[in-house]
Image (tube, rainbow, N blue to C red; front, side):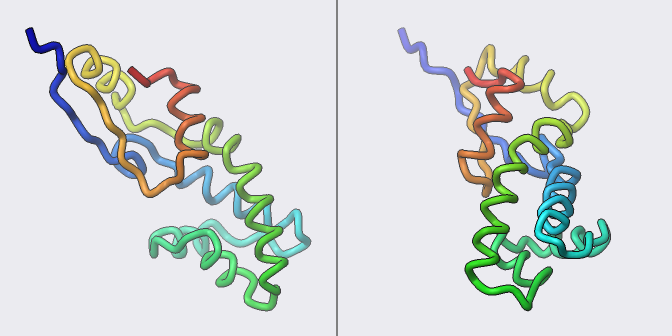
Length: 130
């Protein structure tokens, strides 16, 4: 008897989960922490929608900073971003219910351009793993 469940693959950001509020908050907190002016949500949204990685976004926001300063900012961002994801990120309507229902009959895989370090805490916090 074959006990293998069929496989379903979902994209994470923008399909199941809205991380945009967490991304904006984390960038604003990071820049303020390093004594830069707080960037507007609109400016951060423009950069977010371009799909830039963290390093490129920081270069756009603080072009006068050195590579070492950008690295310190990126490290700070990553430290606070995990918490912001859990507290400010939002599941799209019925996404958690849908995943919970589907995992009874399917093996679920969540695909993301996010690294595991930021994805796993969300999955664990909401207990959505099989």
